[in-house]
Length: 316
Image (cartoon, rainbow, N blue to C red; front, side):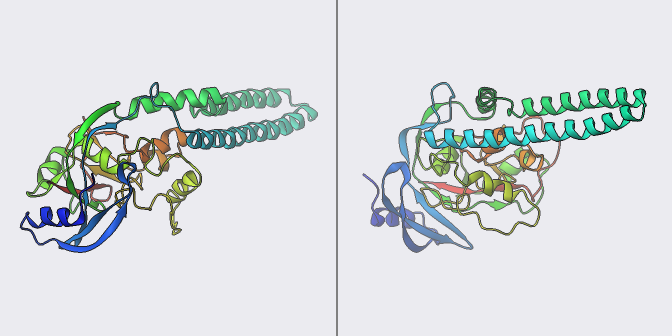
């Protein structure tokens, strides 16, 4: 049975901290409609998130079938990408064939042969890029998608999650840190701490079993993601920037790496690497799942306050 508002109030007041009870809010975490408190503490806002025993976390492409909505979205993305690359191939060949014809007409066979060799090399390079990004065939696209998910998502598992107060949105670091270990140690200031990977995935996905926190759809999602990667974009993102089932703003910007209580991974993004690098949906979309892991072991560069963020919790 969900905790009542009065029970939540009592437990928060028992902490002896100056939490303000702003207002009750509706939630749909764990697929159950309920109410919880939106709380204020100093300049931040928190939400009471009820725990759950035996919650399923992580992903296994062999055991976790994609929902029909996500599958349909991927098929549309493949079709658009395939058309784009085919268009580039046709344009490249058309441009070169014109030059080859002009060289042949002028009797310059050496130039025509050189252009033919350049065309062959160019077509090979374009086809290789097309294949690498998964746009040669739908079967190849889906295979690459599953391979990448297997590499970058946390494994399928169950965990017991306790009740906690969770900061509504993450905050960027106030300063750069030389190492992740130093950042984690500095950010865990009692009574606050950082979420474990299990806790973070639970609060991100709202206890739901879908790959994405917004549910079984990709409609409009990729458009929003690619707009976020555009310089000077000021449009709102009605999907990515909507609160999740607990009322939290989380995993909405792949340029952010959210620090958790783990020295091997951060969550919620890849620092914008895949999006800024122009990678396709196969590599960009997984950053927006609760289960995405950005590897930090062996990192040789400081943690920039412009890309790394954190979210405080209090376990109850």
